[in-house]
Amino acid sequence: MNKKGIIIIVLVFGLVTLGVLKLKKNKEDVKGKLYIHDTTAPILVESQKPKMHAFDKAFAFLGTFEAIRQNTIGSDVAGKIIKMNVQEGDKVSKGQVIAKLDDEMLALQLESASVNVEMNKNDDARNNNLIKQNAISGVQSEKTKLALKAAEAQYKLIKKQLKNTSITAPFSGVVTKKMIDLGSVIGAGTPLIELTDISSLKLTISVPERDILKFKVGQKVILNADVYGSKEFKGTVSSVSYKADASHNFKIEITTPNSKEHPLMAGMYGSVALNNSKAKTALAIPRKALIGSTKKSKVFVIRGGKAKLVSFTAGIGDSEFIEVVDGLSENDLVVVKGQINLQNNTNVITE
Image (tube, rainbow, N blue to C red; front, side):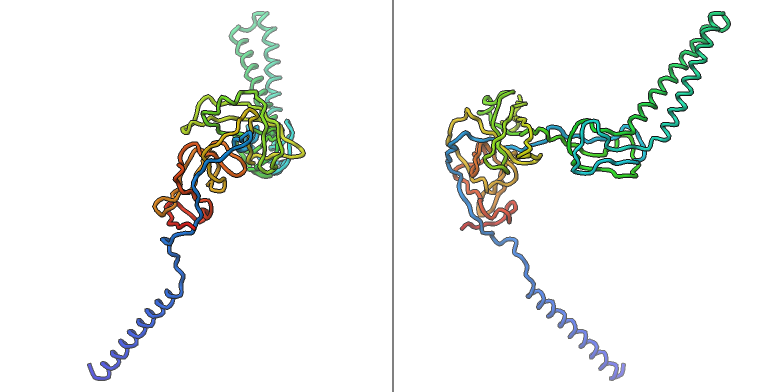
């Protein structure tokens, strides 16, 4: 290789080396400017130990209002939707037509079945006269009668299918979900709408073993809805479970008629206060520490500098505190502020 070629190779190698060094420097500069969150850095939270709290009035059991009835309404026959008479949010009455399927083919089949019934009736009448004259056998007459019964059964079946092309509401309620639309081709059993009856509602609560005997079916109680504050609703205990769950809580259902002035909705939080309840003092935590609902109560507890998600059994409650029946002790540090930024095993520091 001549001297000129060697010089060119050295120059190319030098340029490549400079390029690599430049890229490496740019990468380091960019990395230095980027913010990389340190997942191990502790998060500042506020904590508090459970303490004895005086529930100084007729204490409340917490729960959620549910619709008295909620069903998915489907079609008994297949066909094409030619009329859709409701939308989500519409109120419907029992027997009101929700949707209409194309019934032209079924109408023609019904007409044909009617002709078939008439024809078999005529054959049966003729055979009845002939058998009196011993002109035909009894077996032949019996076949005619069976053919007539089959034709009548087919007529009734098609007539019922034709009637089922008009899909009606089995009870009064509100359309809370709509699954199909005009022009949809559906099969038998296809769900069309979700119909919810909130003319009455039921409040479902979980009651600890020690309080279960305070509830009886038919008992009159006072309900409150969180959204209406101190407004009271009259309720009746409609169901008392005879079997406890794993936490020794019993399921109670209380029904209440809906109010026009203060309408209740399915999913609202509510509570029931017992007039025969006595004031009591019990271990409690602030309601704001609660993660999720009172049915599956959880809180973050600080242990070894980490936030641990812990389940506990909730009892009675008031506007600020919830009783701790089981799962927490007086020495636990419960996170009451800052838990929105936490996950299980997150490093934390306290104020």
